[in-house]
Image (cartoon, rainbow, N blue to C red; front, side, top):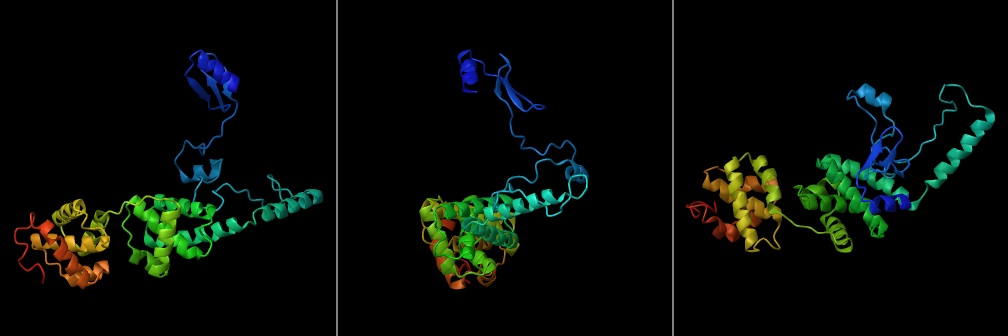
Length: 309
């Protein structure tokens, strides 16, 4: 194959074509076969109905990171019948029985068992947190990297899965707070924080926290208007430019910004109501409100009128 590629490159042949029938990739200029057979990763369907999919699918389910075997396992059926429904002969049955034993033994691996348990837990967490499929796959990728780097040792599987989900949500900009994650995953904040820091530090993950990710979540829960939401985003952007948000809870910054924005448009949203929605104490919201009030002053003329009630 390398000789064929060299020949095509020397003669500046740059138009390979794929024969969908034979699976060969050929050079359209000289006709040389570059690759004899390629793997067909599609399901071979041209019809959209469910019945046709079930009847004509060829390659099984798509590859998924969030399954322990990447959806590429082989299962030997325990039904001792051939494709036509006839029973297998005794020698053939014994042969397949031995194959089943060796197949099951080959899958007994410590990491494999770990992934099976972890991804079962991940399915539950992803469903209860309501995160999309791409976030679930990303969390599974992070967890696999943690297993490869022996970061699981000394920590429980649920806490590391929760940490992977939390990191994935932060990297993809999905608003899921630490309180939401700990409540759904039924672990302490200390364990989540420990798992989160271990993953970020050892896997060198880049996290760019954005308080604006929580705006829609908080604003929708409070039923405030779209203009209030947009003003809150402006306030947060100004706060971030001056690095005032560093060291503060993103959800706390969001709560204070929404509170000030609601005042500007005469939407009566109390601190107590925001506290209930965000699970941030009124004391914290009041402190952050005082902190970011100067940044909101250029947007809100009556900033001092009832702002701290």
